[in-house]
Amino acid sequence: MPFAYHRTVRFADTDAAGVVYFANYLAICHEAYEESLGAAGINLKTFFSDHGVIIPIARSEADYLRPLSCGDRLRITFKPELLQADSFALNFELTRLGPPEKCAARIRTVHVCTSTTKKGRAPLPPAIAAWVAAG
Amino acid sequence: MPFAYHRTVRFADTDAAGVVYFANYLAICHEAYEESLGAAGINLKTFFSDHGVIIPIARSEADYLRPLSCGDRLRITFKPELLQADSFALNFELTRLGPPEKCAARIRTVHVCTSTTKKGRAPLPPAIAAWVAAG
Amino acid sequence: MPFAYHRTVRFADTDAAGVVYFANYLAICHEAYEESLGAAGINLKTFFSDHGVIIPIARSEADYLRPLSCGDRLRITFKPELLQADSFALNFELTRLGPPEKCAARIRTVHVCTSTTKKGRAPLPPAIAAWVAAG
Amino acid sequence: MPFAYHRTVRFADTDAAGVVYFANYLAICHEAYEESLGAAGINLKTFFSDHGVIIPIARSEADYLRPLSCGDRLRITFKPELLQADSFALNFELTRLGPPEKCAARIRTVHVCTSTTKKGRAPLPPAIAAWVAAG
Image (cartoon, rainbow over all chains, first blue to last red; front, side):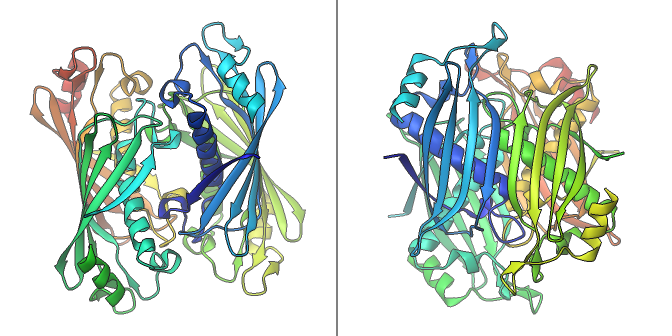
Protein backbone atom coordinates (compact mmCIF):
# COMPACT_ATOMS: atom_id res chain seq x y z
CA MET A 1 0.00 0.00 0.00
CA PRO A 2 1.46 3.38 -0.90
CA PHE A 3 1.52 6.13 1.71
CA ALA A 4 -1.66 8.26 1.61
CA TYR A 5 -1.96 11.90 2.66
CA HIS A 6 -5.22 13.81 2.74
CA ARG A 7 -5.50 17.51 2.13
CA THR A 8 -8.20 20.10 1.40
CA VAL A 9 -7.53 22.68 -1.31
CA ARG A 10 -7.03 26.09 0.33
CA PHE A 11 -7.84 29.54 -0.98
CA ALA A 12 -4.13 30.39 -0.91
CA ASP A 13 -3.45 27.49 -3.31
CA THR A 14 -5.62 29.06 -6.00
CA ASP A 15 -5.01 31.78 -8.58
CA ALA A 16 -7.14 34.20 -10.55
CA ALA A 17 -8.18 31.45 -12.95
CA GLY A 18 -10.18 30.11 -9.99
CA VAL A 19 -8.20 26.90 -9.58
CA VAL A 20 -4.97 25.66 -8.00
CA TYR A 21 -1.86 27.41 -9.40
CA PHE A 22 0.23 24.87 -11.34
CA ALA A 23 3.34 25.14 -9.18
CA ASN A 24 1.27 24.49 -6.04
CA TYR A 25 0.50 20.93 -7.18
CA LEU A 26 4.18 20.25 -6.56
CA ALA A 27 4.09 21.85 -3.12
CA ILE A 28 1.06 19.74 -2.18
CA CYS A 29 2.94 16.59 -3.18
CA HIS A 30 5.93 17.71 -1.14
CA GLU A 31 3.65 17.89 1.90
CA ALA A 32 2.83 14.19 1.45
CA TYR A 33 6.58 13.47 1.38
CA GLU A 34 7.06 15.45 4.62
CA GLU A 35 4.13 13.70 6.28
CA SER A 36 5.56 10.30 5.41
CA LEU A 37 9.02 11.21 6.68
CA GLY A 38 7.50 12.48 9.92
CA ALA A 39 5.46 9.28 10.31
CA ALA A 40 8.73 7.33 9.97
CA GLY A 41 10.18 9.26 12.91
CA ILE A 42 12.46 11.54 10.90
CA ASN A 43 12.87 15.01 12.43
CA LEU A 44 11.71 17.43 9.74
CA LYS A 45 13.25 20.48 11.37
CA THR A 46 16.75 19.11 11.03
CA PHE A 47 16.15 17.00 7.91
CA PHE A 48 15.44 19.99 5.69
CA SER A 49 18.23 22.19 6.98
CA ASP A 50 21.86 21.85 6.03
CA HIS A 51 23.77 19.60 8.43
CA GLY A 52 26.51 18.58 6.04
CA VAL A 53 24.22 16.44 3.90
CA ILE A 54 21.21 17.67 1.94
CA ILE A 55 18.86 15.86 -0.45
CA PRO A 56 17.63 18.53 -2.86
CA ILE A 57 15.23 17.90 -5.70
CA ALA A 58 17.18 17.64 -8.95
CA ARG A 59 14.24 17.17 -11.30
CA SER A 60 10.46 17.33 -11.33
CA GLU A 61 7.90 16.26 -13.89
CA ALA A 62 4.20 16.97 -13.62
CA ASP A 63 1.18 16.08 -15.71
CA TYR A 64 -1.75 18.29 -14.73
CA LEU A 65 -4.89 16.35 -15.62
CA ARG A 66 -7.69 18.24 -13.88
CA PRO A 67 -8.28 21.64 -12.29
CA LEU A 68 -8.76 21.78 -8.51
CA SER A 69 -11.00 24.25 -6.67
CA CYS A 70 -10.99 25.70 -3.16
CA GLY A 71 -12.57 23.17 -0.81
CA ASP A 72 -11.81 20.11 -2.97
CA ARG A 73 -10.72 17.10 -0.94
CA LEU A 74 -7.53 15.43 -2.16
CA ARG A 75 -5.69 12.19 -1.55
CA ILE A 76 -2.01 12.13 -2.46
CA THR A 77 -0.29 8.76 -2.67
CA PHE A 78 3.28 8.07 -3.65
CA LYS A 79 5.83 5.32 -3.90
CA PRO A 80 9.55 5.90 -3.36
CA GLU A 81 11.89 4.29 -5.89
CA LEU A 82 15.61 3.81 -5.22
CA LEU A 83 17.62 5.02 -8.21
CA GLN A 84 21.19 4.70 -6.99
CA ALA A 85 22.97 4.63 -3.64
CA ASP A 86 22.75 8.44 -3.58
CA SER A 87 19.35 9.11 -5.16
CA PHE A 88 15.69 8.19 -5.23
CA ALA A 89 12.50 9.21 -7.02
CA LEU A 90 8.99 9.74 -5.68
CA ASN A 91 6.06 8.92 -7.94
CA PHE A 92 2.98 10.80 -6.80
CA GLU A 93 -0.65 10.44 -7.76
CA LEU A 94 -2.95 13.26 -6.75
CA THR A 95 -6.62 12.26 -6.63
CA ARG A 96 -9.62 14.54 -6.23
CA LEU A 97 -12.03 12.69 -3.98
CA GLY A 98 -15.58 12.33 -5.17
CA PRO A 99 -17.80 10.81 -5.87
CA PRO A 100 -16.58 10.17 -8.42
CA GLU A 101 -12.86 10.07 -7.69
CA LYS A 102 -10.68 11.51 -10.44
CA CYS A 103 -6.92 11.45 -10.91
CA ALA A 104 -5.95 15.15 -11.02
CA ALA A 105 -2.18 14.97 -11.50
CA ARG A 106 0.81 12.65 -11.76
CA ILE A 107 4.07 14.05 -10.45
CA ARG A 108 7.58 12.66 -10.17
CA THR A 109 10.44 14.20 -8.22
CA VAL A 110 14.07 13.04 -8.24
CA HIS A 111 16.14 13.60 -5.08
CA VAL A 112 19.94 13.47 -5.01
CA CYS A 113 21.90 13.29 -1.78
CA THR A 114 24.72 15.81 -1.68
CA SER A 115 27.50 16.49 0.79
CA THR A 116 27.74 20.24 1.39
CA THR A 117 31.09 19.81 3.12
CA LYS A 118 32.71 17.67 0.40
CA LYS A 119 30.74 19.33 -2.44
CA GLY A 120 29.67 16.16 -4.24
CA ARG A 121 27.19 13.33 -4.22
CA ALA A 122 26.94 11.29 -1.05
CA PRO A 123 25.21 8.01 -0.16
CA LEU A 124 21.73 8.34 1.35
CA PRO A 125 21.80 8.47 5.16
CA PRO A 126 20.74 5.05 6.58
CA ALA A 127 17.40 6.36 7.94
CA ILE A 128 16.44 7.68 4.51
CA ALA A 129 17.66 4.59 2.69
CA ALA A 130 15.48 2.52 5.04
CA TRP A 131 12.51 4.84 4.42
CA VAL A 132 12.92 4.45 0.64
CA ALA A 133 13.22 0.67 0.94
CA ALA A 134 10.11 0.45 3.14
CA GLY A 135 7.97 2.67 0.89
CA MET B 1 -15.77 26.52 22.62
CA PRO B 2 -14.01 28.27 19.75
CA PHE B 3 -13.51 26.41 16.48
CA ALA B 4 -10.19 24.51 16.43
CA TYR B 5 -8.16 23.63 13.34
CA HIS B 6 -5.01 21.52 13.40
CA ARG B 7 -2.14 21.92 11.00
CA THR B 8 1.47 20.81 10.63
CA VAL B 9 4.03 23.40 9.57
CA ARG B 10 5.17 22.59 6.04
CA PHE B 11 8.53 23.18 4.37
CA ALA B 12 6.86 25.58 1.92
CA ASP B 13 5.72 27.73 4.86
CA THR B 14 9.31 28.43 5.90
CA ASP B 15 11.93 30.87 4.69
CA ALA B 16 15.72 31.06 4.73
CA ALA B 17 15.68 32.11 8.40
CA GLY B 18 14.59 28.51 9.05
CA VAL B 19 11.12 29.39 10.35
CA VAL B 20 7.65 30.25 9.06
CA TYR B 21 7.62 33.39 6.88
CA PHE B 22 5.66 36.13 8.66
CA ALA B 23 2.95 36.52 6.02
CA ASN B 24 2.27 32.77 6.10
CA TYR B 25 0.96 33.01 9.67
CA LEU B 26 -1.97 34.90 8.16
CA ALA B 27 -2.50 32.28 5.47
CA ILE B 28 -2.54 29.53 8.11
CA CYS B 29 -5.22 31.41 10.05
CA HIS B 30 -7.24 31.84 6.86
CA GLU B 31 -7.22 28.05 6.46
CA ALA B 32 -8.93 27.73 9.84
CA TYR B 33 -11.57 30.20 8.63
CA GLU B 34 -12.12 28.13 5.49
CA GLU B 35 -12.30 24.89 7.46
CA SER B 36 -14.93 26.37 9.76
CA LEU B 37 -17.01 27.68 6.85
CA GLY B 38 -16.84 24.27 5.18
CA ALA B 39 -17.88 22.55 8.40
CA ALA B 40 -20.92 24.86 8.47
CA GLY B 41 -21.93 23.65 5.03
CA ILE B 42 -20.84 26.73 3.10
CA ASN B 43 -19.56 25.93 -0.41
CA LEU B 44 -16.01 27.31 -0.50
CA LYS B 45 -15.72 27.18 -4.27
CA THR B 46 -18.53 29.67 -4.75
CA PHE B 47 -18.05 31.58 -1.47
CA PHE B 48 -14.63 32.91 -2.41
CA SER B 49 -15.47 33.81 -5.99
CA ASP B 50 -17.39 36.88 -7.07
CA HIS B 51 -21.13 36.22 -7.34
CA GLY B 52 -22.28 39.78 -6.78
CA VAL B 53 -21.29 39.85 -3.13
CA ILE B 54 -17.75 39.42 -1.77
CA ILE B 55 -16.41 39.65 1.78
CA PRO B 56 -12.80 40.77 1.42
CA ILE B 57 -10.43 41.35 4.31
CA ALA B 58 -10.21 45.07 5.02
CA ARG B 59 -7.66 44.91 7.81
CA SER B 60 -5.29 42.50 9.51
CA GLU B 61 -3.25 42.74 12.67
CA ALA B 62 -0.73 40.15 13.77
CA ASP B 63 1.48 39.74 16.81
CA TYR B 64 4.17 37.17 16.10
CA LEU B 65 5.20 35.74 19.45
CA ARG B 66 7.26 32.67 18.59
CA PRO B 67 9.04 31.20 15.58
CA LEU B 68 7.62 28.02 14.05
CA SER B 69 9.67 25.27 12.40
CA CYS B 70 8.93 22.65 9.75
CA GLY B 71 7.11 19.75 11.38
CA ASP B 72 5.72 21.78 14.29
CA ARG B 73 2.14 20.82 15.16
CA LEU B 74 -0.25 23.78 15.43
CA ARG B 75 -3.73 24.40 16.76
CA ILE B 76 -5.52 27.48 15.44
CA THR B 77 -8.63 28.63 17.28
CA PHE B 78 -10.72 31.67 16.56
CA LYS B 79 -13.91 33.41 17.53
CA PRO B 80 -15.98 35.45 15.07
CA GLU B 81 -17.22 38.83 16.30
CA LEU B 82 -20.04 40.72 14.62
CA LEU B 83 -19.04 44.34 14.07
CA GLN B 84 -21.95 45.73 12.06
CA ALA B 85 -24.61 44.34 9.77
CA ASP B 86 -22.04 44.29 6.97
CA SER B 87 -18.84 43.31 8.78
CA PHE B 88 -17.24 40.94 11.25
CA ALA B 89 -13.85 40.27 12.79
CA LEU B 90 -12.06 37.00 13.45
CA ASN B 91 -9.78 36.76 16.48
CA PHE B 92 -7.28 33.96 16.02
CA GLU B 93 -4.90 32.33 18.43
CA LEU B 94 -2.20 30.17 16.95
CA THR B 95 -0.73 27.66 19.40
CA ARG B 96 2.33 25.50 18.92
CA LEU B 97 1.50 22.15 20.48
CA GLY B 98 3.94 20.79 22.98
CA PRO B 99 4.57 19.77 25.48
CA PRO B 100 4.67 22.47 26.53
CA GLU B 101 2.05 24.33 24.50
CA LYS B 102 3.00 27.88 23.59
CA CYS B 103 0.98 30.68 22.05
CA ALA B 104 2.85 31.51 18.85
CA ALA B 105 0.72 34.33 17.39
CA ARG B 106 -2.43 36.39 17.84
CA ILE B 107 -4.05 37.56 14.64
CA ARG B 108 -7.17 39.57 13.90
CA THR B 109 -8.81 40.01 10.52
CA VAL B 110 -11.69 42.34 9.67
CA HIS B 111 -14.05 41.32 6.86
CA VAL B 112 -16.42 43.73 5.12
CA CYS B 113 -19.25 42.56 2.89
CA THR B 114 -19.33 44.38 -0.42
CA SER B 115 -21.70 44.35 -3.36
CA THR B 116 -19.70 44.17 -6.57
CA THR B 117 -22.79 45.01 -8.61
CA LYS B 118 -23.81 48.07 -6.54
CA LYS B 119 -20.22 49.00 -5.61
CA GLY B 120 -20.80 49.56 -1.92
CA ARG B 121 -21.18 47.84 1.41
CA ALA B 122 -23.87 45.19 1.67
CA PRO B 123 -25.40 43.26 4.59
CA LEU B 124 -23.84 39.87 5.32
CA PRO B 125 -25.62 37.03 3.50
CA PRO B 126 -27.88 35.14 5.95
CA ALA B 127 -25.72 31.99 5.98
CA ILE B 128 -22.65 34.02 6.94
CA ALA B 129 -24.52 36.08 9.52
CA ALA B 130 -25.68 32.80 11.08
CA TRP B 131 -22.13 31.43 11.02
CA VAL B 132 -20.84 34.56 12.79
CA ALA B 133 -23.61 34.38 15.38
CA ALA B 134 -22.96 30.70 16.07
CA GLY B 135 -19.18 31.08 16.39
CA MET C 1 16.99 36.74 -29.41
CA PRO C 2 14.82 35.07 -26.77
CA PHE C 3 12.79 37.22 -24.41
CA ALA C 4 14.73 38.12 -21.24
CA TYR C 5 13.26 38.86 -17.82
CA HIS C 6 15.29 39.99 -14.83
CA ARG C 7 14.39 39.19 -11.27
CA THR C 8 15.99 39.29 -7.82
CA VAL C 9 15.48 36.29 -5.51
CA ARG C 10 13.18 37.33 -2.65
CA PHE C 11 13.08 36.10 0.93
CA ALA C 12 9.59 34.72 0.32
CA ASP C 13 10.99 32.51 -2.47
CA THR C 14 13.27 30.68 -0.04
CA ASP C 15 12.70 27.84 2.40
CA ALA C 16 14.37 26.58 5.57
CA ALA C 17 17.17 24.99 3.55
CA GLY C 18 18.25 28.60 2.90
CA VAL C 19 17.60 28.52 -0.85
CA VAL C 20 14.72 28.89 -3.31
CA TYR C 21 11.96 26.29 -2.78
CA PHE C 22 11.85 23.96 -5.79
CA ALA C 23 8.28 24.79 -6.86
CA ASN C 24 9.11 28.51 -6.86
CA TYR C 25 11.51 28.05 -9.79
CA LEU C 26 8.40 27.32 -11.85
CA ALA C 27 6.59 30.39 -10.53
CA ILE C 28 9.59 32.58 -11.41
CA CYS C 29 9.54 31.24 -14.97
CA HIS C 30 5.81 31.92 -15.18
CA GLU C 31 6.55 35.57 -14.34
CA ALA C 32 8.76 35.78 -17.42
CA TYR C 33 5.88 34.39 -19.49
CA GLU C 34 3.53 37.03 -18.04
CA GLU C 35 6.04 39.81 -18.66
CA SER C 36 6.42 38.78 -22.28
CA LEU C 37 2.66 38.59 -22.82
CA GLY C 38 2.27 42.04 -21.28
CA ALA C 39 5.04 43.44 -23.49
CA ALA C 40 3.10 42.08 -26.50
CA GLY C 41 0.06 44.09 -25.45
CA ILE C 42 -1.97 41.19 -24.07
CA ASN C 43 -4.16 42.14 -21.11
CA LEU C 44 -3.06 39.88 -18.27
CA LYS C 45 -6.11 40.53 -16.13
CA THR C 46 -8.46 39.05 -18.70
CA PHE C 47 -5.99 36.58 -20.23
CA PHE C 48 -5.64 34.52 -17.06
CA SER C 49 -9.33 34.48 -16.16
CA ASP C 50 -11.94 32.30 -17.79
CA HIS C 51 -13.63 34.02 -20.72
CA GLY C 52 -14.68 30.88 -22.55
CA VAL C 53 -11.14 29.94 -23.54
CA ILE C 54 -8.32 29.14 -21.15
CA ILE C 55 -4.76 27.96 -21.79
CA PRO C 56 -3.79 25.94 -18.72
CA ILE C 57 -0.45 24.25 -18.23
CA ALA C 58 -0.79 20.55 -19.00
CA ARG C 59 2.77 19.51 -18.18
CA SER C 60 5.92 20.87 -16.61
CA GLU C 61 9.46 19.53 -16.48
CA ALA C 62 12.24 21.09 -14.45
CA ASP C 63 15.93 20.35 -14.01
CA TYR C 64 17.22 22.14 -10.93
CA LEU C 65 20.94 22.66 -11.48
CA ARG C 66 21.98 25.14 -8.78
CA PRO C 67 20.63 26.51 -5.53
CA LEU C 68 19.57 30.18 -5.44
CA SER C 69 19.86 32.48 -2.44
CA CYS C 70 18.00 35.60 -1.31
CA GLY C 71 19.39 38.58 -3.19
CA ASP C 72 20.70 36.57 -6.17
CA ARG C 73 20.13 38.32 -9.50
CA LEU C 74 18.49 36.16 -12.16
CA ARG C 75 17.89 36.33 -15.89
CA ILE C 76 15.13 34.15 -17.28
CA THR C 77 14.99 33.61 -21.02
CA PHE C 78 12.58 31.45 -22.95
CA LYS C 79 11.52 30.52 -26.43
CA PRO C 80 7.93 29.59 -27.34
CA GLU C 81 7.50 26.53 -29.55
CA LEU C 82 4.28 25.82 -31.43
CA LEU C 83 3.24 22.20 -30.89
CA GLN C 84 -0.14 22.03 -32.60
CA ALA C 85 -2.90 24.49 -33.53
CA ASP C 86 -4.12 24.28 -29.93
CA SER C 87 -0.90 24.01 -27.94
CA PHE C 88 2.59 25.39 -27.40
CA ALA C 89 5.58 24.80 -25.16
CA LEU C 90 7.86 27.30 -23.42
CA ASN C 91 11.51 26.38 -22.96
CA PHE C 92 13.00 28.41 -20.11
CA GLU C 93 16.58 28.88 -19.04
CA LEU C 94 17.12 30.42 -15.62
CA THR C 95 20.56 31.98 -15.17
CA ARG C 96 22.12 33.24 -11.97
CA LEU C 97 24.01 36.38 -12.89
CA GLY C 98 27.61 36.60 -11.82
CA PRO C 99 30.33 36.94 -12.33
CA PRO C 100 30.48 34.18 -13.25
CA GLU C 101 27.08 33.49 -14.77
CA LYS C 102 25.73 30.01 -14.09
CA CYS C 103 22.73 28.19 -15.54
CA ALA C 104 20.57 27.41 -12.48
CA ALA C 105 17.61 25.59 -14.05
CA ARG C 106 16.04 24.44 -17.29
CA ILE C 107 12.25 24.33 -17.29
CA ARG C 108 9.68 23.42 -19.92
CA THR C 109 5.95 24.01 -19.70
CA VAL C 110 3.29 22.77 -22.13
CA HIS C 111 0.15 24.87 -22.58
CA VAL C 112 -3.06 23.54 -24.15
CA CYS C 113 -5.89 25.82 -25.23
CA THR C 114 -9.26 24.65 -23.98
CA SER C 115 -12.79 25.85 -24.54
CA THR C 116 -14.61 25.98 -21.21
CA THR C 117 -17.94 26.39 -22.97
CA LYS C 118 -17.49 23.45 -25.39
CA LYS C 119 -15.36 21.41 -22.94
CA GLY C 120 -12.65 20.42 -25.36
CA ARG C 121 -9.48 21.61 -27.05
CA ALA C 122 -9.70 24.82 -29.03
CA PRO C 123 -7.35 26.58 -31.47
CA LEU C 124 -5.08 29.23 -29.93
CA PRO C 125 -6.61 32.72 -30.09
CA PRO C 126 -5.00 34.72 -32.91
CA ALA C 127 -3.15 37.10 -30.55
CA ILE C 128 -1.53 34.16 -28.74
CA ALA C 129 -0.75 32.30 -31.95
CA ALA C 130 0.99 35.47 -33.18
CA TRP C 131 2.90 35.79 -29.89
CA VAL C 132 4.11 32.18 -30.19
CA ALA C 133 5.13 32.68 -33.81
CA ALA C 134 7.03 35.88 -32.98
CA GLY C 135 8.88 34.41 -29.98
CA MET D 1 12.10 61.12 -0.30
CA PRO D 2 11.02 57.67 0.81
CA PHE D 3 12.50 54.62 -0.88
CA ALA D 4 10.40 53.52 -3.89
CA TYR D 5 10.15 49.99 -5.27
CA HIS D 6 8.25 49.08 -8.43
CA ARG D 7 6.58 45.76 -8.98
CA THR D 8 4.05 44.18 -11.36
CA VAL D 9 1.30 42.01 -9.86
CA ARG D 10 1.96 38.40 -10.82
CA PHE D 11 -0.48 35.57 -11.43
CA ALA D 12 0.97 33.70 -8.44
CA ASP D 13 0.04 36.66 -6.20
CA THR D 14 -3.65 36.22 -6.96
CA ASP D 15 -6.34 33.91 -5.62
CA ALA D 16 -9.64 32.54 -6.87
CA ALA D 17 -11.37 35.85 -6.11
CA GLY D 18 -9.36 37.19 -9.07
CA VAL D 19 -7.23 39.60 -7.03
CA VAL D 20 -4.12 39.60 -4.85
CA TYR D 21 -4.43 37.31 -1.79
CA PHE D 22 -4.45 39.44 1.36
CA ALA D 23 -1.29 37.97 2.90
CA ASN D 24 0.64 38.63 -0.31
CA TYR D 25 0.33 42.39 0.19
CA LEU D 26 2.67 41.91 3.15
CA ALA D 27 5.09 39.83 1.08
CA ILE D 28 5.16 42.54 -1.62
CA CYS D 29 6.02 45.16 1.00
CA HIS D 30 8.78 42.93 2.37
CA GLU D 31 10.31 42.88 -1.13
CA ALA D 32 10.60 46.68 -0.98
CA TYR D 33 12.39 46.33 2.37
CA GLU D 34 14.80 43.79 0.84
CA GLU D 35 15.42 45.99 -2.20
CA SER D 36 16.25 48.95 0.02
CA LEU D 37 18.62 46.91 2.19
CA GLY D 38 20.34 45.60 -0.93
CA ALA D 39 20.67 49.13 -2.33
CA ALA D 40 22.38 50.10 0.96
CA GLY D 41 24.98 47.41 0.41
CA ILE D 42 23.64 44.95 2.96
CA ASN D 43 24.16 41.29 1.95
CA LEU D 44 20.68 39.77 1.91
CA LYS D 45 21.89 36.19 1.91
CA THR D 46 23.54 36.58 5.30
CA PHE D 47 21.20 39.24 6.68
CA PHE D 48 18.15 36.99 6.68
CA SER D 49 19.88 33.91 8.06
CA ASP D 50 20.79 33.37 11.67
CA HIS D 51 24.30 34.57 12.48
CA GLY D 52 23.76 35.16 16.17
CA VAL D 53 21.51 38.19 15.64
CA ILE D 54 18.18 38.16 13.84
CA ILE D 55 15.60 40.93 13.32
CA PRO D 56 12.25 39.16 13.05
CA ILE D 57 8.94 40.89 12.52
CA ALA D 58 7.11 41.12 15.83
CA ARG D 59 3.95 42.78 14.54
CA SER D 60 2.20 43.68 11.32
CA GLU D 61 -0.83 45.84 10.59
CA ALA D 62 -2.42 46.16 7.19
CA ASP D 63 -5.28 48.19 5.79
CA TYR D 64 -6.37 46.77 2.45
CA LEU D 65 -7.95 49.61 0.53
CA ARG D 66 -8.24 48.32 -3.03
CA PRO D 67 -8.09 45.02 -4.88
CA LEU D 68 -5.14 44.41 -7.20
CA SER D 69 -5.24 42.39 -10.41
CA CYS D 70 -2.66 40.45 -12.39
CA GLY D 71 -0.65 42.88 -14.48
CA ASP D 72 -1.30 45.91 -12.26
CA ARG D 73 1.76 48.12 -11.85
CA LEU D 74 2.60 49.01 -8.25
CA ARG D 75 4.84 51.45 -6.43
CA ILE D 76 5.70 50.62 -2.85
CA THR D 77 7.22 53.36 -0.72
CA PHE D 78 8.17 53.19 2.93
CA LYS D 79 9.85 55.11 5.66
CA PRO D 80 11.79 53.43 8.49
CA GLU D 81 11.12 54.73 12.00
CA LEU D 82 13.46 54.03 14.91
CA LEU D 83 11.47 52.82 17.92
CA GLN D 84 14.18 51.92 20.41
CA ALA D 85 17.85 50.92 20.26
CA ASP D 86 16.72 47.39 19.41
CA SER D 87 13.69 47.96 17.21
CA PHE D 88 12.26 49.86 14.27
CA ALA D 89 9.04 50.09 12.27
CA LEU D 90 8.48 50.34 8.54
CA ASN D 91 5.51 52.32 7.28
CA PHE D 92 4.59 51.20 3.78
CA GLU D 93 2.27 52.72 1.23
CA LEU D 94 1.32 50.55 -1.69
CA THR D 95 0.09 52.48 -4.72
CA ARG D 96 -1.54 51.12 -7.84
CA LEU D 97 -0.18 53.16 -10.72
CA GLY D 98 -2.69 54.68 -13.05
CA PRO D 99 -3.82 56.85 -14.36
CA PRO D 100 -5.28 57.53 -11.95
CA GLU D 101 -2.97 56.48 -9.14
CA LYS D 102 -4.75 54.97 -6.16
CA CYS D 103 -3.47 54.05 -2.71
CA ALA D 104 -4.18 50.30 -2.45
CA ALA D 105 -2.86 49.49 1.04
CA ARG D 106 -1.12 50.88 4.10
CA ILE D 107 1.04 48.42 5.98
CA ARG D 108 3.22 48.71 9.06
CA THR D 109 5.73 46.15 10.29
CA VAL D 110 7.64 46.23 13.58
CA HIS D 111 11.07 44.60 13.68
CA VAL D 112 12.85 43.66 16.91
CA CYS D 113 16.53 42.74 17.00
CA THR D 114 17.16 39.55 18.94
CA SER D 115 20.29 37.72 19.97
CA THR D 116 19.86 34.02 19.26
CA THR D 117 22.94 33.20 21.31
CA LYS D 118 21.92 35.21 24.41
CA LYS D 119 18.16 34.66 23.85
CA GLY D 120 17.07 38.23 24.37
CA ARG D 121 16.78 41.61 22.71
CA ALA D 122 19.94 43.09 21.27
CA PRO D 123 20.85 46.53 19.89
CA LEU D 124 20.50 46.93 16.12
CA PRO D 125 23.75 46.18 14.27
CA PRO D 126 25.44 49.46 13.23
CA ALA D 127 24.76 48.95 9.50
CA ILE D 128 21.05 48.52 10.17
CA ALA D 129 20.89 51.40 12.61
CA ALA D 130 22.49 53.57 9.93
CA TRP D 131 20.02 52.33 7.32
CA VAL D 132 17.10 53.20 9.62
CA ALA D 133 18.55 56.64 10.36
CA ALA D 134 19.10 57.37 6.66
CA GLY D 135 15.63 56.25 5.57
